[in-house]
Length: 113
Image (cartoon, rainbow, N blue to C red; front, side, top):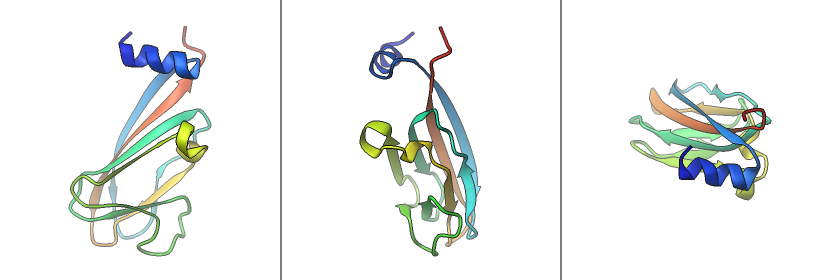
């Protein structure tokens, strides 16, 4: 186990699983991460050519939510600073056109040795 995982285990009391995904976004809001009560952090990065808006509700008004600018805009959320936001269901839309959203979610797994 590496130093980063040792640190996280000591801080959070368990092992961490990394769950990565890349999702194509469009003008219509779509689910990009399901609710996960064991999540402790999530990072989103916009690798596409159009701005992406993240929201906690599918029916959020157009161009509202957390804005990830085109070509590298990002946001990271962790339970220490953002309470339950990493565990929540997240929706994304890119009104300007199809874009590419990368997500990395860290999950606490106390069942692993």
